[in-house]
Image 1 (cartoon, rainbow, N blue to C red):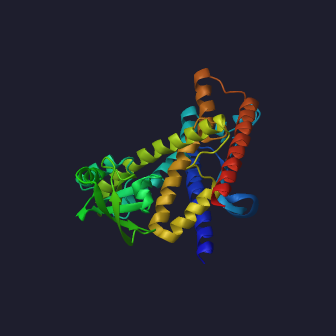
Image 2: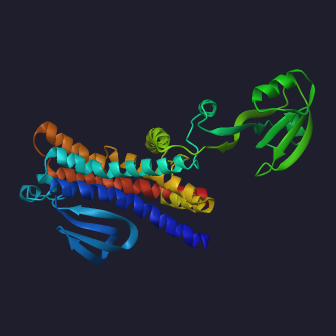
Image 3: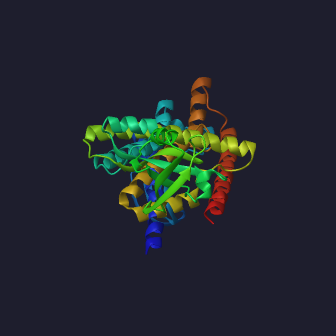
Length: 370
């Protein structure tokens, strides 16, 4: 049952993100007087024409992922077809820029709306890139959190390793004195040659263990870090939630750009896809996990992917909206259109490259999962 639900959630996720994107192009094109020949739900081959309205055929297609819009003259080769009334090329340069940016804008708006909704209910914790940022947020009352000392690593051959102190556990007390910060542990150890650790271990940190550790120069042979053990967030006003959603959008946009940059740097250097980059298989897995964790987790994934889709599409790369935008800007600067055959060839090569990258990422997704 959960597999079926996850599959449907995955199809819905991709379809919503892409259809929202295409809806932006559709509305902007209609506003500019560009004829939208087809608005397709799913991908070809065509299954059925639902209805026709305003010169647009609304269709259902056999592949149940996403959707598309087909603008009149967007792939025209001749000047006559390009400049025909109602064609994309006949629209003014500002209108074409708006049409190309409209899909990305819709994805950004969807993410902001979903983030505002999630933050207003107090269900989501904002993203923080460091523990210091998280602590400052807690001091301002933006979030509530319970700090804990986490044992990141038990050094091989050290005194802690010899008596079986578990890695990836929580150190709750030293000699019966509760600790919340690594500095507190260091201070207590500096005063003793032998200490007793109270530790929570196991997958959910529910197992209580006690260890007596000999110290050498005040050290037991463990690497500690600060862990936010429990995080919660209060319900917020709409204005406060909107402010947080804009902040989240900024952070996640920056992180997406960093991730894409790291991807191409890694591909250029080693031909490998770095950790943290997911394709369709990885997204399907994330969808499955989010469905198991609940509707709000699923919505947050939708908002994150909507932002990622927006950032990816606005990149000045052939075949993407940003790449097509470059040709429109070049037309404005040069005061004449770029050669259509050249543009189509560049976009075609760019498309093949992107498909190759997608297949490579998918391969790494499968390797990491199985």
